[in-house]
Image 1: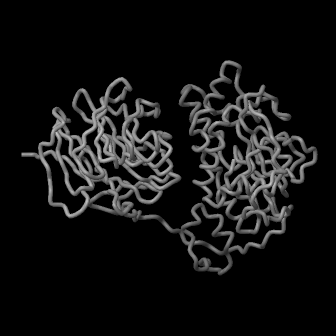
Image 2 (image 1 turned 45 degrees about the horizontal axis):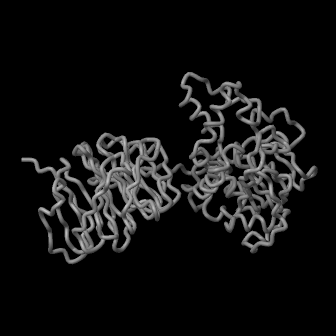
Image 3 (image 1 turned 90 degrees about the vertical axis):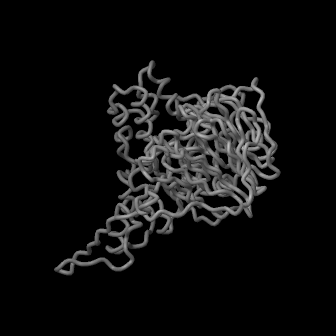
Length: 526
């Protein structure tokens, strides 16, 4: 609990944090759910003052996340239909109970809880329409927006971390110091609380904030409290509680556009009567994609469409992955769901999927044609350096900086463990999977060795082989299409080709004046 975000919130606002404990479960005072944790008050704990210490409580807006800032029901509905394709979403869209699982019969309630407990559930939420823009407009208007949210009682293992990741992705790093995680919002100080819960109750009978109900079907019987029906209407609703700066018609036109990033800086044009402001329409014609990431001493990996039907290439560029035509650079598609620097992007063997890994250890699988995400996998506790698909598309090998688990094999598409490639003493920076039966996983490491592991899956009972044909980092490993040869590239300025049957070098390429970073096999057509 040494996170700066927690310290900053605790320094200003008294609230309660939930910690897992072996004690008997207790009942939340305002919910029938059973909470597998206890509540510990921390508002008297001395902590270092952070940047939000100077906040004026008269300017504080507390904003709930689930089904207020984010569309909780939309993501739940997608997963529910995936489990039960014949079901209608009307029950979810028009539900009567605040606790979502209470809207289902006893036999379906466990499935609802299972869906909400899945890792990756909270990070996948879409923002409510115009919610992110509204939060930024409130901040620009001088209001201090804090995100005040509660963890699900049956999903506290990953819920909190994923909420932080969601905020980083959609609101930026600066908002990480504006998150309050608490089960009891009545003890948090602020001027207003925007929340979808019909009635927010807790230890404090008279909270300092005014509850503004964010409109949802299950809270429409509450009539005595102010209501926010849409994030586009935040200004007239909050004007009853704050003194907000006046907004000119020109600014209003710009701020309510669907894509404010395309708003022009010059004053808007006027019609023939010179009375009503209007905005010119800007249309996107091309995407000028960035160039691949470059780091001194490390390869910049570029993967080409293996089917040969297109000349598309994929590569990492900052926090996005790029799919681009090699001959027509303006034909580009951008995958932008990573929350950290993208470190590697590769095609699957059949070209139907792309896998991209990032500096936080996540791997995302997505369609190269539509850039729609198919799956998200928490692969390792450090940057992912290389990824390799097997030929059947059932397994994926990944390597990186995670100490104690430099290389592993995962099942597709779930990301379940399919073995660890143990034995390297330093980080692993390259991997590949052979097509020859029995197949092998090859790994190249900064410990100057190449590991050969039988699989996938990789089993502990199978003894791996380690080749030491180089005297510096092994930067890349690549099997030939028939799996009989293995090409190695090293920082000792050499590239070698190894026979996979005898493990002996059959060819050495010398003459490079610097490190060799990428070898590649090619089919020669006669």
